[in-house]
Amino acid sequence: MELFYAAGSGLIHDLREKGFEVFLDLKLHDIPNTVAGAVQSVTSTGASLLTLHASGGERMMLAAVEAAQAPGSPRLLAVTVLTSMDGADLNGTGVASSPRDQAVRLALLAQRCGVAGMVCSPEEVEILRRKLDVGNLLVVPGIRPVGAAIGDQRRIATPGSAIRDGASMLVVGRPITQAADPAQAAAAILAEIEAAGSIS
Image (tube, rainbow, N blue to C red):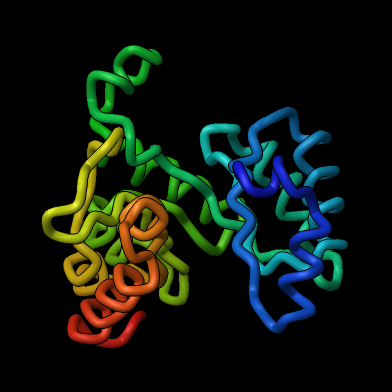
C-alpha cells in the first residue's frame, strides 16, 4: 500500500514488464459502487492479486467479485481480521467475538460471495483450511522468524509453522525490509519454507 501510494500504478506496469507478478495489498473498503470501480481500475494495471476487507460486507464483496469478472482482473483476497488486532482491539470496535471466530465468520461470508482467497493470521490458517473449499488461497501475514522483532503484530508465527498449517502464500515485510542484509534474510525465510514442505 505504501509503495503504491508513493509510486502509483506505473510501478506495477514496470514490474509486470520485467516478468514479476504483483500482489496489490490495498485493502479496499468502501461502498459497493466505489469498490467495484476500484477493482475495474486495478484491472488495467495487470496486478495478479488484490485485497479488500471482508468487513465491508456482502454487498461490497459481491460488487467486487462482479467487477473482477472482466478479462485480466486480479484475483480477489478478502482480509478477515488484521494481524495487529487482538480480542481487546476487536472489542473496542464493537465486535465481541474472538479474532479466530470473527476471521472464520468473515472468511465463510467472503467464500459465499465468490471471493476465492483469504488473508488471515497464522492462528486461523489450520481451521480455515478445514472449513473452506479446496483450492482457496490462504495468504498469511504476521510472519516473524525466530528472534525477529514482533513490532505491532499480535497474532504471529514463524514461516515454517504457517506453511505446515496450510498457508498458500506468506506476506513478509519488516523482517526483510528492516534487516541489516535483506537478501540474506529473504534467503533464510525461503530456506525455512522449503524445509517445512511444499506450499499448498
